[in-house]
Image 1 (cartoon, rainbow, N blue to C red):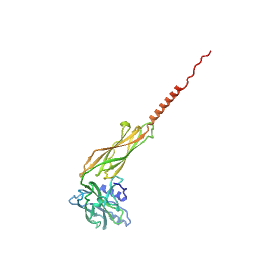
Image 2: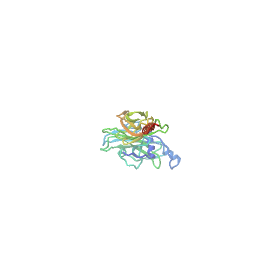
Image 3: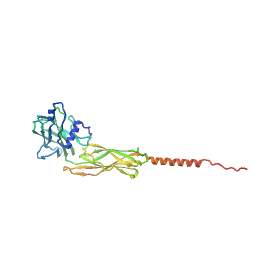
Image 4: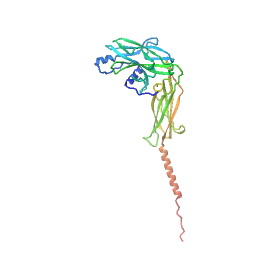
Amino acid sequence: MTMTLPSRTTLRTAAVLALGALGLSAAVARPAAAADDAARWTVRPAANSFGADRKDYGFTVGPGGRLEDAIAIVNQGAVPLRLALRPADAVSTSTGRFGLVDRGTRSTGVAAWVRLEQDVVTVDPGAEVTVPFTITPPKDAAAGDHVGGIVTAPEGADVDRGVQIRLRVSGPLKPALAAGGVHIDYTNTANPLGSGDATVSYTIHNTGNTILAARQAVSASGPFGTWARHAGRLADSPALLPGGSWKVSAPLHDVRPALRLKATVKLTPLLADAAGSVAPLSATTTTGHAWAIPWALVLLVAVALGLVGVAARRARAPRPVRGVVA
């Protein structure tokens, strides 16, 4: 899946998804009091048989199945609030969170499967409105995790609120991660005749059909594993959607210039179940290579060759013959 860069609206929604239904303020082209009132609303999953205190939606359903739920909207302002509602697919943002794509983006996942009973509602001051919706994945829906949400926004205002929908379509789960573009850059400016620093860069790709985070281990070594150096403990990657990616740069210090350096990236997939427990899966290892000139060795070899050359020239030089004087 090709990931597009999120817009400002997507980034705002990403923060909402991370923290739940969060009140935001916005400056729009209207009187200040009205703008404040228009921004004062919250959205959350409705209290029903799925639960009474949910922060977002989490479902498991079979291909061709059907789910019914509702979203609750509360107007905390002093004037009536007219809101537009729309389903949206999720993307992985550059901050590592999930964001909901903007209106006008073609729906290919959850957004195409959600049907809202109303797409525009008016909520009186202090009142709560519940809007039912259904989720119906098609019979050929791919097994695995699909993420989207429902976005609400007042007409004419540059602000929105979103609630995440995480849907797992039943079927074979195939969690998998891959490290692409593994590259090692070696620099040695402080002491050209000694050890230097290296940076191992790569991109983590979620090539499976489940949401995954990655536990990372990075090292660099010379030929046959000599002079190995490790990057130390790296933070786990953010959770990645299927098809999502995350770029990483890991620094290493005191790396020997061993002529041919090998970078090794080990990724351990972290899979969360419905209860939130995380299970590490089998790790994968990917390598990359780069040249690192050992200038101390080059200098030593040059000096040695120079001495050999001098000795050879002396050996070939004709020796003077001592004559006998009569």
